[in-house]
Amino acid sequence: MATLSLHPDRLFPTDPTVRHIARELYQHIKNLPIVSPHGHTDPAWFATNAPFANPAELLIIPDHYVFRMLYSQGVTLEQLGIPRRDGSAVETDPRKIWHHLARNYHLFRGTPSRMWLDWVFAEVFGIDVRLEANTADHYYDIINAALATPSFRPRALFEKFNIEVIATTESPLDELKHHRALRASEWKGRVITAYRPDIVVDPETQNFAENLIQFGKLSGEDVSTYAGYLRAHRNRRAYFREAGATSSDHGHPSAFTANLSASECETLYQRVRHGRATSAEDAELFRGQMLTEMARMSIEDGMVLQIHPGVYRSHNLTVLEKFGRDKGADIPLTTNYVHALKPLLDAYGSDPRLTIILFTLDETAYSRELAPLAGHYPALRLGPPWWFHDSPEGMRRFREQVTETGGFYNTVGFNDDTRAFFSIPARHDVARRMDCAFLARLVSEHRMELDEAHEVAHALTYDLVKAAYKL
Image 1: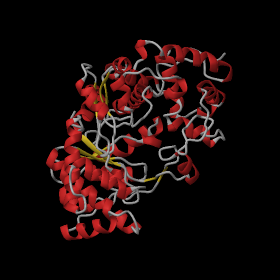
Image 2 (image 1 turned 90 degrees about the vertical axis):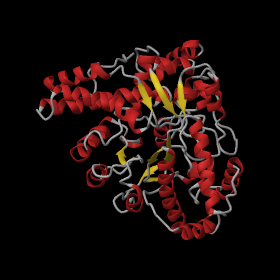
Image 3 (image 1 turned 180 degrees about the vertical axis):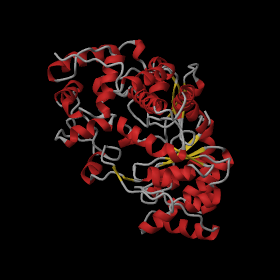
């Protein structure tokens, strides 16, 4: 059997001098608490504290990074136990599902998923042989036995992973019952929500008209008018803030914003609210107007505005129809920020009460658009490399292209953006190592003093994310 071991100098520079500096920086920040302000873990895990069912339910079924790679090589989602929308049969034997991963684990060589999973296997479960077909059952038995113990319950792991605070993400139609249960419990772990209103903001969302009706009922507002619709948002935002929310989260197709007059907004809203005969132009205009409205509301209530545009959601129509959204078929798009954000920035970009955190999957925008924008407008901060660029190379490119114009302090540290709970400490460790590697290079080139690098490393790991998200 091939051994599994994690090299202590992984991801550090190969030059001995620079590596030594990176090691020193890392030693001072590696054990700082994890602040996870943007993610998609299930609040029910922490509210109920029920044990995780089995290795497949833990590490494969909720993680589209894992199953999209297997799907790309011919393993069907049915074989991986991904539930179908029509309720028809899929594989239910978790050991068989696990064997699909083990037989195909070589597919993940060189990917971030391989690093994250190996970290979980070695650091969390203490496994010292490599995952492959002939070790599949060995892995399964060790992980399955561990999950049955109290130390592997969600709350115990939250504490073991040294998580200070974690934000989940819920729609405005969510009644937040798990968050209410957590707040009523005696457990001290801090789990907060984030307001994700896409399903009542994007007219192209399936069941948009029905969503608006439910939105009105939950908020107690008449959403037949634009003014009532905005009051409904304010109502639900206040409800989310009671559950700890400090941010809203907006996954629009583009970064387009608009700033229409009140009468134009009412006319546009009446065109889109019934969810039928909506043109693509009207849908884009309404989404753009709502980003500006959300910025205005953020100034009122203090919530941070997160915008992560530029994704063609559910590109694979067959997968969408059979399995629904968020099944690994989202593809990056070219994104314009300079022109798209101007209406919003003209209105509020210089307001110090507003924080807008921008994410991108279009790396060509880093040095050309995003860093110059964030390096000027007081309201703007740059989110970390996200999704497809949550990788060593992506992190390195981000720092190289953003720092020279935007600096370190117009960024917001790191967030993991994950549904896979066990990968959270693994992802944060990668980010910490890569930031230390980047800072070590600046020190070795005499572009920064070592004491300054220590301060920046601490800021990138802990201080900036807490400040940006008001945590």
